[in-house]
Structure formats: C-alpha cells, structure tokens
Length: 474
Image (cartoon, one colour):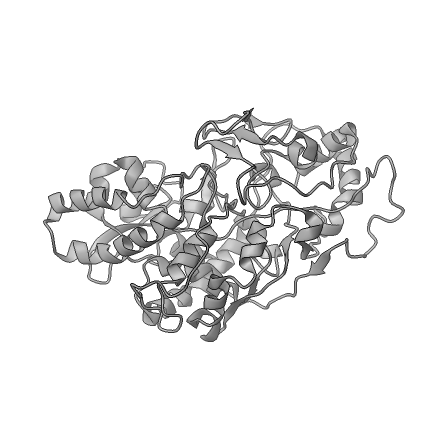
C-alpha cells in the first residue's frame, strides 16, 4: 500500500536532461592551434537569450517546498495512516510538512481540507552518491513501469473506510483522482528511472481548454501513445541556459513553462494566476541552486591534463569552468549529434507544443512559448559527476561509456542501491544479454537508443581517463 500511494502521488514532473559535446580528434595527439577560437561547431545554433522576471530567492524556496501549486490530493489523515513520520526533514520545513518526506507537501484545499500532494521534489530532488540530499538532482529511482490506474481504487477503499462515500475529503481529492485516472495508462515506461514528463503534459493538455484551463472530460486531440523516456535535468544548470528543456524549445517567460505542472489539478485561470504570482520567485530560487562538489578523492595532476583535453575537445559546445566561466548556449542538430531522434521528431509539430502556444500560458502577461529547434542542447556540465545516467534519455550509464561509444552496453541493469563507480563516474551496473526486468535498460526499444555523441571516441585511453578526472571537478 505504501508503494502504491507513493507511485500514485508521483505524477508531478518537469522537463529532462540532454548532454552532448563537440570535437572530433584527440587533442593531446593532435593539438588544436587555437582551441578557444570562436567558431561555431558543426551543426550548432546559438539559443537566443530571453529576459526573465526578477524574483525573491527565499520566497521562491518557501513556495516550492510548501506552496499549493498542486491543490488536490489525498486527505492528510489517510496519508499519515499509511506513511510513518520522516524525521530527517531535509528541506527544513515547519508544521505538518516537517514530518513528511521531501517529495510531498501538506496543503489546504480550497474547501479547507488538509491534503497531501506530490511536489516538484518528486522528480527534482534526490540523494547524491554519498547519501546527502540535494534539491535539484533528478530522481533516477522512480518506477513508472506499471499502469497505476488500479491504484486509485486502493486509495478510494481507504478513504471509504475513513470517511464514507462522500464529504469534503472526497471533494478535495477529486481533481487528483481525475487526473491520475486519465494520465496513468499513457505514462508507462520500460525501465525504472525513465521519466515520462513529455507524455504526461501532452495527455493533461488534451483535457484542458487552452484559454480557460478548465478540465474537459473528452480528449481534445490525438497524440502518439509512445512514451519517450527522459532523464530528469539538474536544476543547477538552469541559470546558465537561455532556453530550458531538452531541445532548448522553452522561450519567453520560463516561469510559464515550469508552472505548467500545475495542470495536474488546476481548477481554472484564477488559480493559475495565483500560482503565477509566485513563480518568478520559484525560478529565482532554482537559478540560485549550486552544483554539488565531488565528495571523493581525485587526482589533481590527472585533472590538470584532462582540462587541456576538455579545452580542445569539449568547451566549444559546453563552455568553460572555474574563473570567468562561459557558456555558449548552443543546440546541436539532431542529425549531427546522432543521439536517439524520437524525442526531437515528436516535438516538431507535436500536439502539446501547439496547445501551449495557443493557451493562457502563451497569451497572458509575460508569456511563455515553445519553439522548434531540430536539435539537442549541449548542456552546462556543472556537477556532471552526480547526474548519471547520460544523454537525454538516460541510455548511457556513466561518463566512460559516454566518451567511448563502442563500450556502451545494449542491456544494462542498475538497481536503486547500486554503488557509485568513481573510476568511470556513474552508478555501477551489470551488463546483460537481454532485458531481465524493469531495472534493465534496453537500448533496442523505440526512443531508448544510445547512439550518437561519439566525440570522445578518438581520444586515447590516457586522455579519456584524464578528461573524466577533470569532469569530476566541475
């Protein structure tokens, strides 16, 4: 029952992570004359900057951790009868939230009932390899491999036992119940840790009037019933990027893009306006998050050698680090970077993109928008040591296999308690010959491919390991 409720509450998602870098030759074997030359790499396009509203970091932190941007959920007493108290309180919250796990928030429904809802940390908060909790770290342990539709029945049964068949508790539960039953059959993934964020938003929007934002029972448009797996991005890179989301399609006011998760239980435009009034602050907090420092020993001399490799092979796409940092804000054409193209193919002319650009989110106040780029963002690499697996679909288990495409396994299995591999930088895994279970990543499945980003293939083994050592320091 605990696992069931956990999964039912875990439908709040945001956007996910893509990583690519540039440079074809081993820089130590064939040094570049001027690795800092300002020439765009092949297939690269600069993402234009969008001015963003100024917000209050502390106010944003408080609203993100304890606000009611999701307003419908499971009655507080029902939730507490299933879950034991969480004594760590890693978010430093007060009141009832001090004893609830960081991925949940106890909020007041409009009718005064206290309910527990999933919050942004459901997907954007997790444990670092050394056990420390980090806000903004993508949660790679979520299990969306089962259709959760039937789990609503378990919640209903418990609520019937607690409250009978009607009453204010049920009224406060209805919007969450409705959304969960609607989206659950469409967001099933093949592997634990794969995130169905794109499909979630697509399904929710199909049941929302674009201008009033009110719920419509009848599905308003057709959408592919294919879940493109995504890897949740690290929030601490948000402040560097001109346009967020996997392919840099997020334009205009980024607050409008991030608050779209409220469509899970949103009532109407009035509620959307109230949520919007807080999201410039939320974005200010997200942009203030700093990357975690590598917590294990590292070889300074080897890292210094790796920095030279990085400058020659990687920084033209991914920027520079340390003093006077730079970030070029590039996306690379999908045909050039060569990574799995299904996400990019579905995004172009996709129903959610069209819905969003005709909706309240794109027409009210400081509007947001979704554009088409045709490629994948070369991400900032701050804290990259903590963000395995890699590529936008999480198909590559560690940095070594990212930088040596021939070593990438077709079937690999990582469990939630896998040890951290300090040498290859990522969670340890076992290579399989076929898909063993829901923890096995199968790159032969549609959207799960591990091709592309072959820019490290020409490195010597010595320089590849030196580069990995340097990447630990970012």
